[in-house]
Length: 292
Image (cartoon, rainbow, N blue to C red; front, side, top):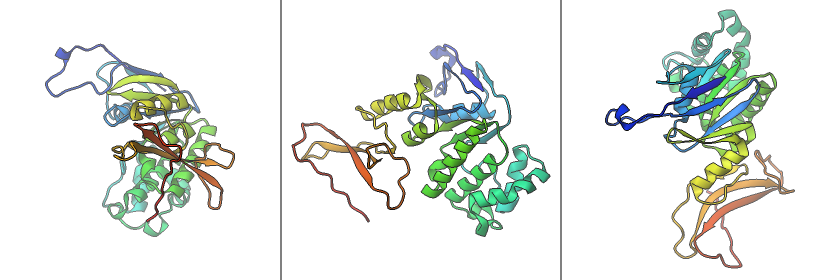
């Protein structure tokens, strides 16, 4: 799979209010490889994924995708809200290229993976966003895709389902499936992807190893050292007037100090908190944690 969206454009090429969503972006993804797209909102990540899926055509340049593509580029895409979960499984997987016989053979596996057995006969419009995401992901990964395109769909699922999805993605990679993952989660990019692209205002800022690219993105985002560990990046709040400090991230490490993506119940962990300080912190600095 490869994409080249390019061209040097002058302001005269655009009408008032228009802008180039992507400009001079080139990359290739090989069989069994995972590449992540990271960047702030409006950077062109979703547009690029839509180009790869064939939903949007580039004004200039070329997009080449070989094999069967399973796109997850929008929550609930391909589902009819008035049809039941059962009916939507058949309709969605037919759109993705499966025969009715193939769908019947995979049906129970899809329902089991999505975990929506009790709501199978209810219309999809009654599903929560998490349920719709689970059903969409389950349909896509059971169509024997060659290329899987994922746009933030995993962000709405619960932790247990996300863990199941990551295991499934690893299994698909072992089978040679290539996929492109769009995410604001540094954890997802570094855990799942070999390489990453950092996009900003439609331009390719950096391409390389996932950890290197994520580090550069976080340095730009937070104006300081990147987290580079599985955790939650937090948009910096205004600095505390008394201490001059602000919280920028929270993540876990195991007892040996190694980054920990998925802590298990009963497992000893270290909770790490990233802060930025506008002044030199005092010798004794503490962090209070509250649960509600």
